[in-house]
Length: 117
Length: 115
Image (cartoon, rainbow over all chains, first blue to last red; front, side, top):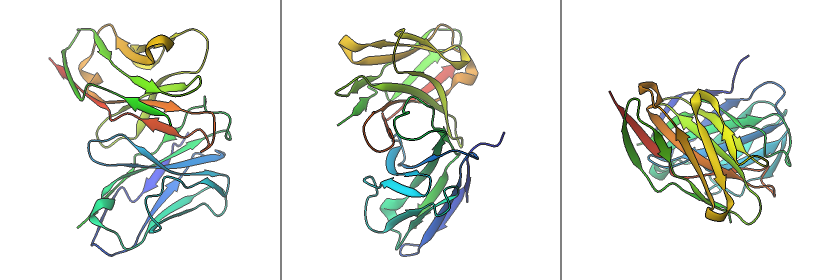
């Protein structure tokens, strides 16, 4: 079946522009995560949704970052007034079950590579 | 707070040689431990995971890992490396409290395979 998809795959933005990154999780997956992967680093947690509820946004680096999942499926990560330090790969992952089932696999999308000039 | 250390940034091995990638974690309780592989332009693919039971776990592509609580380690091994194994490998720990069991990743080990 189809895996997690993300669009666009590549995004170049001028400093100060707003961007929106989309994630289509695996159908029926309840949990959705966003991670940020800077060059040469491992992914770092940004935020977590259970269905449409954003239960943890402790990893969002500033109030310029905003995520939503209004219908409990597709999610959008929005970055306002982009800065050069926002340049990174943004990964989305989905998981079939809810919190408390951390033993279950998170399935990752290919990521969106954001470059801020 | 949970954390993961992968002490080797780069490793080069000859095709057919054995491989061991090191991973040390810090976590207060029994952790959920994962190894993921990332090829260029690709998402992360799960190789194997440990959450309880037998401390030696088998994964895909001939990989295995051993959980050693006394050493806080979860090293990844493969007896004979193939050229297609060249990629970046990430160890991750998942907690049982909060954040939907978000994953905390190490900084990764880049594996190069010499033919």
